[in-house]
Length: 634
Image 1 (cartoon, helix red, strand yellow):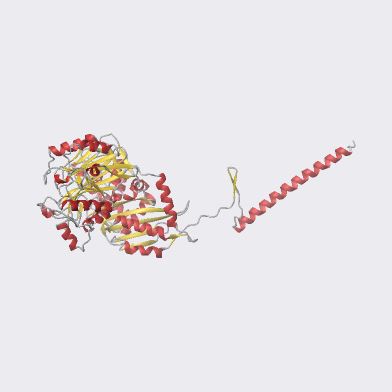
Image 2 (cartoon, one colour):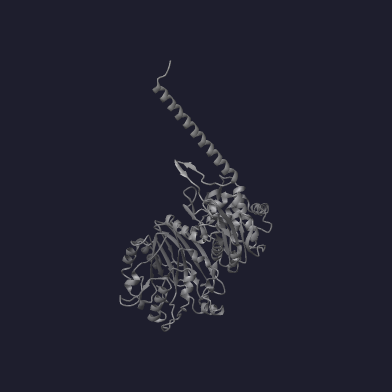
């Protein structure tokens, strides 16, 4: 049957349309295939397109990776205080910077990395370790472990690595058998490839626990690759153990400064200190140079007099030596990253360190003069003081070049250079409410207030008026407000003026309770300092106890005592902490044979409560330099 002309016309239009659509699609597919083939064969990405969630992403320029200029970094070498050190690039295996890396030296608590591995490898995960008297009597009180307490293996290893507990080290060794444990430690070192390493104890107290920075670098490389279980513990901020067979709950905080300060690069490691080894350290660091690329370094230090400074200088040198080919500064990029990180990751606790009396006159001044007039000389063995967020001491006398001697039996006046030395050592707050602050009259006392203010050190227990002295001095760290007040119970009474002259606060002030309670309302935690008791008497008097308990009842969280020049007991009372006397820190020991020692008391706080208390004994050497007794191994 013949089609009509109209139907034939529509039919041919439809055929032409379909043919055109078919040819167009064929051409598009062929051209796309050829374009992709040419792109793949030449390696040129061109205008590559990817469809992600409906969005077309065109060419993205690869992120620029900075390169390390080792020649520039070598300028740091002369600034490193460590006797031996080794900085290694863990990505390519090259030694970036070193000095005497084969010297065998004591390693102190770095030992505990091996101790942890041996304990984990030779005990069952469900083993329970009981603290013996011998273990608890080991020098050092880190972790606050008590005789008879029982812990799971993993809990005690956390105490070992976070608190650097010597007691935990000995308890773990005893559980396996101490002699056997030491053999296993030495075998483990040889297995890893630490050919020049020997162990004589599990804690690091022994001066015969020796190694080299080469061996320590081998150790941290091994741990990074094979023992993330140990490395991860060293990077924890804290470990909490509640209930069970313990005498009380434990919260063990990481004592490593890099963790506490939330260092951008630190992955993990261990530090140590004894008076023979000085400061030691081994750690691994990772620098994120792009979104996906990292550079990994290890740092090992032995016999350093300034571990913190050494690590900081090495890290600064590394980041300063990383440069983009375009000329951009990698260090500038890190500054921006740190600011952002601090804004979104605030710290949750604050560390306070309390020491006893500081008096740098008479024999101490003479010793400083014999050593070139360096007022930092007495602090040579305690550079870790500045690790604390807040550092407190009793400053036993005026710091001035003014006034006149009132003729007391013992009359002290320290050189004005003492104040910048205290600031450099890390001191934040000092109490002036003591019996020697008026030894050189009102002029020297007021001059001391002025100099402390200029030196950015808060004087407590004293002020330009009584009202000023009664005002709580507040230090805020990590969003936590810590307040300070100070009172003297042993004079000088002539400095407890009315509100018109410079004054100190008296413990006999009838308004003392209201002063303390009003101050406590303004802060998260209140510290009250008392100059009280009897000189060279280790027994706490009834008067001391009454004043300390009254302060806690009125709102104080921590009470710190001084004046006896000897250490007295530490007490927990109604949730508060009382240290009746911390003894001497730096003092002319010729004034008394009992004036050579004292306590360093570290207290960790969050906004609500005391998290941790660590007590360490210090003793002065013949040069009036304090050092830690419990880490000296002597």
